[in-house]
Image 1 (cartoon, rainbow, N blue to C red):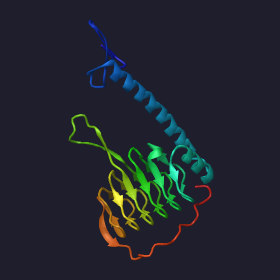
Image 2: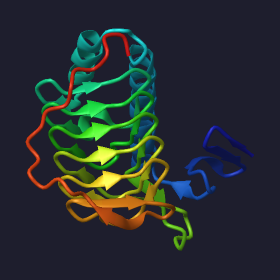
Image 3: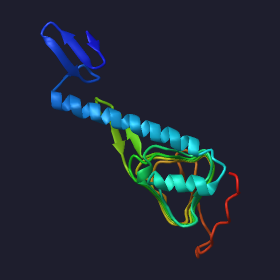
Image 4: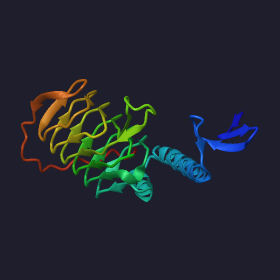
Length: 211
């Protein structure tokens, strides 16, 4: 009989993993410590989700920085944001991140300066290895360059690099690298044009006060 990862047999009591394999005492203690660390992370992420609905950029961004997100000068994240590992997220100066964004962070996410990311964008760092018998996760960083625009409801998959000044059309699913200055769209995203503006020196306007 197995109860809470303990297997009760006539020969004694053993720790087992989720697949029922017996664990050494050291392995079991390591898993227990990791489980409690995961619980603490879940609590932190829940609190950050609540913080995400405070109608103040100053308060939200201050708490996000305390949680480990590296926000450049005048960068801001709009309301309703969700995260996985905040400490792996870097956002450059003057960038504006839209409402209800999801930033994974299980590997590093780097967003450049003066980049505009619209509402409900999802950026993932982790996906399952479909060929692995244990269905393990693969984690890869995502990089978005300076002066990019990412349209609403875009999904960016693990390992993608989006070059400086690139444009991703709304609703696209980005599975491969995007060259600098390219315009991409579709599912999966493909190059559909080239950005005419080459000298990128602008600064984004201020975010709305209560968004």
